[in-house]
Image (cartoon, rainbow, N blue to C red; front, side, top):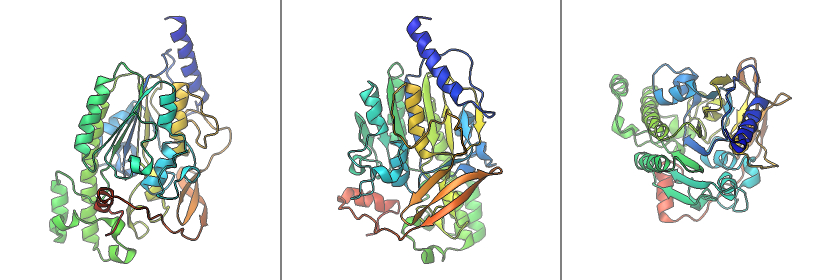
Length: 395
């Protein structure tokens, strides 16, 4: 091993060793610094719907297999219960309110994004998105030399991203792949026999239910859905999770051993645990507890039980790449804090500070504020239609 590679190996191992605790078992073999970084976001994916987090329906074999050889963070909290809030933190490492564009609730142009930091350090940067909020229109293309958007077409974007990843295996890059499903409306390509049985037992109209967008329903309207109809919707949601997992598996197959991959959700999804459906309505655990898996050849598999947040992802990737970024609000996932840490999740009507009591995520403090008047940006027709299709904009 030449001196340059050996020095880089020591740096990486030093970073990993700093974060060791009783849950982490770092690899002891020297490895060069990672060259490739891939961030895969699966929208609206609840942590408790993955097998590695305890679900028994075998919905996520690919993500479960990744977790077996990676670090799984059991108590990850989203920065907020919506795509815009969570991604402002995820793609900067800062509290979402520090980088908000007040005109459209997206990412402010003056914010320094994760992609911009990678690009400034000589990495190629590319993004592939199917969510109409994760676009240049809302500021999330900042720093990406290539940004591809295919509204709602997860299969097409997965194929495009997979080909790009496979063709850049020898390059230094940071790539974001943002998958829309299992976001509502819950309309999987293949409806499982289980869903059909549930629908038949409740005499529910599957075709009609695949058109429902909880984001456009008031609490009173969502309350008119019967328990049977909600059961069918939930089963359709699980069908979409199964399809999302297959896409994640396709992306993982395109990666090599020197790639750091993070798979997570932007937020969860409520199924009437506190009376609501979908997300964006509140800060209850079901809407902010997310899966978070970090895989790299330099880290042995393990389970981390301390609480972490969306804003911790950016500083982790930057630390592994050796890119300095002082002043971030997040902390590297590979660093064990010297004091008990809490994580805050926020939205228009307040914020909640979460911590761990016993083995459970617990709301330690709730602060309620008067709901701010939501931004109503002037949207082009294509963007408005795309957002309406998934329940964000009513016409």
